[in-house]
Amino acid sequence: MTVVDLDVAPIHLRLRGLIVTMLLDGSLREGDQLPSVRAFAAQHQINPLTVAKAYQHFQDRGHIIARRGVGMFIAEGAIERVRQEERAFLTGYVAPRLRHMLGLIDMTHEEFRAELDHAPELPPGRDA
Image (cartoon, rainbow, N blue to C red; front, side, top):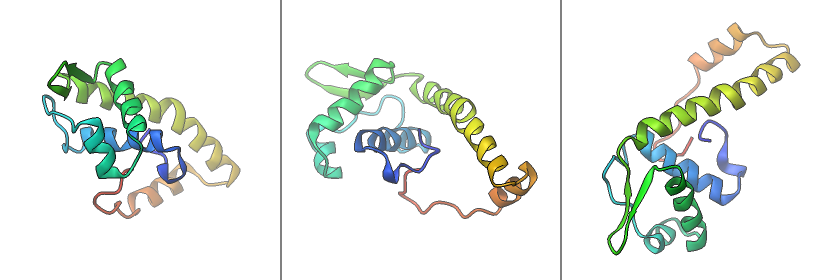
């Protein structure tokens, strides 16, 4: 979910991508408490229902644990599970489409690899 350009994706997918990025880049760690739905919504200027939907997505997958009356926390093992989910998304969804696109534009894997090796880094704070 984070390897595609999320600038044009629906807000709930961009929010999920942001949370995934925060987990994978170390901004969020296992055991960390997430901001409340209202606080996160205010910080990112989005609807609280959208935040609640994103949090529920991660809770359904066991990445977030809710402690009644306390808050939401990153579950133990969540980061490695998210990393594996992202790998599966990359290899199962992105890679076949990329391979197809390379064929359409008559670009070899080697040419693409060379471009990839020289691609600029994303600026800090930009979700992938």
